[in-house]
Length: 203
Image (cartoon, rainbow, N blue to C red; front, side, top):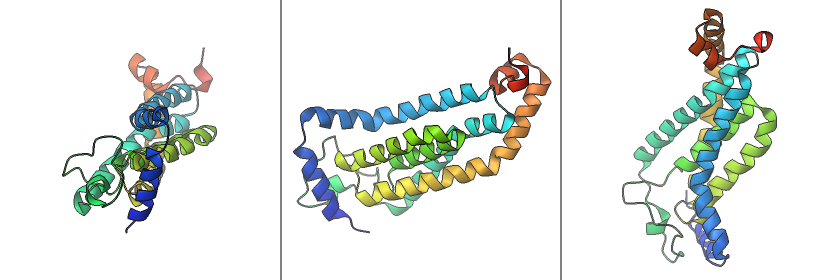
């Protein structure tokens, strides 16, 4: 894959944008991951009052995202693609420091995490997916805008994360729901706090 021309176009356009926008994009590329983490906690907390499968999906969402990250990292260490901020001749300088040699480019871990988190959260709450999917796309684009990834890096990252995470959630929801039921039935305070009281026992 070679998306060098598109990379040059995007990074060149990025340099012509206002400074505040460049700062906002640089902030978002890291803050977005924190936001997904907050959403994981919020979705789990809300699911505690619902039936076991909903709790299971909420608990599995961050786990599935972590699995997607590990898979992305394995692929990255296998492909060994150099960062475009060092490899693409004639491109504008990256807006943030180019990652060091050995921190390879393909696929984008940020995009894999974003794609995984977006779809895992959407599985926990379809309405939330209307927010998380656009946020994931923005995070992926930010990596090219800032000059640290090729377009094909972020596209593959999104595809990888968006494929691995739902598969993990689907595969483990049944067993996880069984664990949630057992935790609720056991009656231990910590277990019930984590698994939630369920709709029948609220209040």
